Image (cartoon, rainbow, N blue to C red; front, side, top):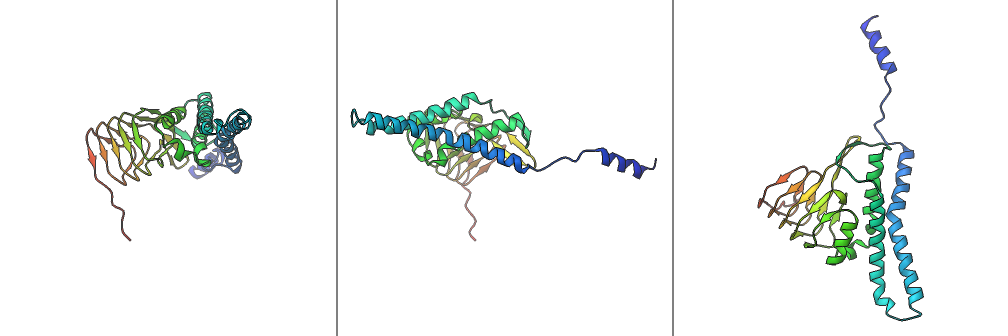
Length: 239
């Protein structure tokens, strides 16, 4: 059989690999996002409403206590849901409906629950509450973290932050990246006494050693910042 004919037969038998997510998969992802992003707030606001409704007939003290009931119920629901989910593990995963991808979608949607209803600035403004909130999401954080309320954590079960870390405004920490049709997950580790300047973006696979100083506007992906190393500020380009 001629070589060209052999190649044609091979190509005919080989299945065509899909490189894009189907519309039905997108719809299924939306359902997961709606369920896990809205469930904590729906439960928390409902419980707080019942607490005020029944408690106000007894005493007006339920009003100043209501925020604590809201925060406690929201964080508790987040923790219960996260504990019931499979663990988020580092690795490379194809973007299709498999266990690893579904696990990531669920954790990702859960991390957006506070953002969607506007609770993030409140939850991240108080030391005790932010510690419990981040721990409920699975982050391995210390109690002694100084941060602006508008920072953003994604993939919390893969984030580790040590003692006396300062995180400035608009810092984002994410443990995933999309390359082609694959999702890559890798942990982020920030050791003790680290300073992270405004608008710094920390991506998957990054380790920042003790005493490091990260200037404003840096972007770190799959990097190791040495102990006591200083990264200069990145000035935005003027058009």
